Amino acid sequence: MRPIFNMPGSSAYPLILGMLSGYPVGAKTVCQIYKEGLCTKREAELMLAYTNNSGPLFIIGTVGISMFGSTTIGLILLCTHILASLSVGIIFGKKLGNKYKSINKDYVKISSKSVNFSNLGEVLSNSIISSVKTVLMIGGFVVIFSVIISILKNSGILSIVSHILSPLFGNSSFISGFLSGIIELTNGLNAICNIHVKSLSTNILICAFLLGFGGFSVMLQILSVVSKEKLSIKPYIIGKILQAILATAYTFVILQIPMFNFNL
Image (cartoon, rainbow, N blue to C red; front, side, top):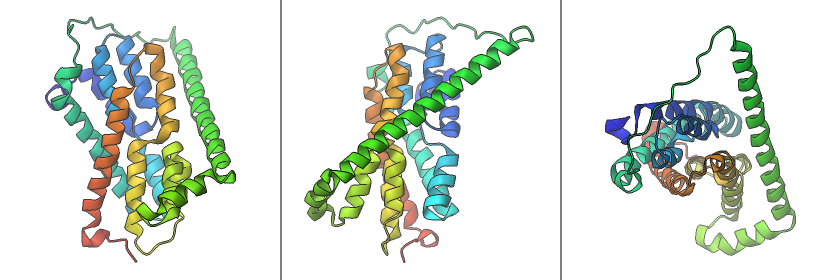
């Protein structure tokens, strides 16, 4: 972690969990190692930018198989998503590391509480309670932002904005789906996947961007987690915008390979 990302070895824990488990597990794990003194505040803020990602189950299962009906598309989106995330980590570590790095590097490592038969029940119950709270929080944010999207659709605001921007982007359906995805990821991805055009690569590229950005719903999920530790979310926002751009670029390059040509 230190040579590649300019981060302590403990940062590998949230990086791996964030890639495997999806939002907002990476943020929770970053806050955990920060509270234990395993990283500095600035290191934790930088880690937030690339340790929070969509999980393989969501990208391959939901987006690839359920929405696009293609495992290959899901695998492409997962590979470019992870590659873009790692690229952000390298860029932040090499280019912005000196700017964000804490002056005090002599922080004390606090050992985690050991688990034995006497406290096993307590540890398991605390883990279950924490997991249930996280699931409820995620579901609550998805519902709230889904309601917001429905209000925008039914009031005609989303259609008006899409119509205004259509001369710039050509297809108002893509604009509507893109704006929905910026607000809430799953709704936007579903709208983009259901747009039937001959150039399917357009749908895939927009989905790659939305997956990289995550949407305002995910952003507020992360904010609700890190605000307890008073960590700044600015590096996270910058990192997700950069990840969205890189994921789109990587996906575009892969789609140029003849065997991955999904245009009808």
